[in-house]
Amino acid sequence: MSRSETVWIVDDDRSIRWVLEKALQQEGMTTQSFDSADGVMSRLARQQPDVIISDIRMPGASGLDLLARIREQHPRLPVIIMTAHSDLDSAVASYQGGAFEYLPKPFDVDEAVSLVKRANQHAQEQQGLEVAPTLTRTPEIIGEAPAMQEVFRAIGRLSHSNITVLINGESGTGKELVAHALHRHSPRAASPFIALNMAAIPKDLMESELFGHEKGAFTGAANLRRGRFEQADGGTLFLDEIGDMPADTQTRLLRVLADGEFYRVGGHVPVKVDVRIIAATHQNLETLVHAGKFREDLFHRLNVIRIHIPRLSDRREDIPTLAKHFLSRAAQELAVEPKLLKSETEEYLKNLPWPGNVRQLENTCRWITVMASGREVHIGDLPPELLSLPQDSAPVTNWEQALRQWADQALARGQSSLLDSAVPAFERIMIETALKHTAGRRRDAAVLLGWGRNTLTRKIKELGMKVDGGDDDEGDEG
Image (cartoon, rainbow, N blue to C red; front, side, top):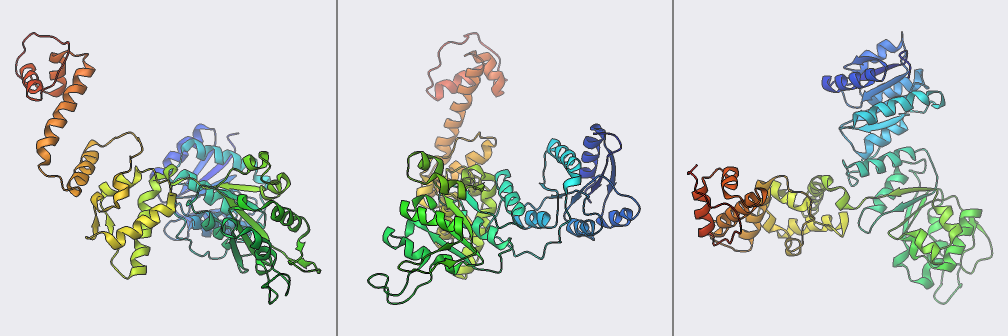
């Protein structure tokens, strides 16, 4: 990039402005910083940069206010929106407002610089967009993890679109919540959202559920019934677990997607519908296609845009926030005071495998709300099945936290005289580790432990440890 390219940085945080200034200047760009959107608005009347990178929440006018003004007066000027409030509303509002990109804090400086370069390169392609209306809150979709930020970005980019979307993710990851969000932030938001789980419908009722039936079409069809496609006309039809759809129904669905019309079961008059399809599955559809269990042409019809929902174990940093949300919601439903997780309990939950993903965490919070005796939730207050689960082998960086967790679990099991077993175990581990680091040399191991050699020898005897090798010369007490 040439030195004539100018980037304006808008943030009330001086440290953020300084970091971006230095990084962009090293790339040969000219920068100018502002601590408020108001200053930028007045300057834009006299001067225009190549790119603006702005925080979303600041005293006075917000980043979205600034974005709206720029879209009106300088629709081709690319704006990158930063925010420490990495939620779905911020992402969608940024994209609907016409932002070039959405950058959640804390961000990687290299990524920020790369975005600025891309914004400048594609400036001529930017089109003016209308300012987004006020958006409905979606508190169920919570995520600070990078993988969830990608989901938010996808929803934001698709907010002006009616395109077909395929959502992949394990059971319990929240695929239907994402489908709801795609609908709610789309041009069809005021029209119906109809959901149907393919795995929950008996095969012989599948076509009637989807396409409806005429009166007398089969035994028990006493009246005309509109199917899910007709119910969703003008809106969105969410087909969950699409991989479980029978082969003959796949064929009918393909025709609807191609022609926009279908026949009710037992009917002879085509029914035209305008429906956006969002499909979801926990299965690998490519594998089903190769196995001949899913139509390849239908797969390509559905796989226009794909969104992957991460497992809960891939977004562990979100677990405390999710748990707090679920505990609050459970408390409201039961009209009780919400439970509070102790910090060691949060850490314990973060290290569990969570095969049931977010749904399992939500159910756990319901159990805690009903069964935990006190308001503060200790590790021992968790469901018994969680206490017996192996924790994922994430590196332990806080041994005090780990020790606290162990003590909490031991006391919850009714164990007493903890120090009688804990102190010798602790000393044994420390001695073994020190000897390992010194290849069995007791004098050096004693130094690492802060003991004299005689103290180390005495401890080895008291603990009944069998230590091979090492030196035998005497040393002073330390």
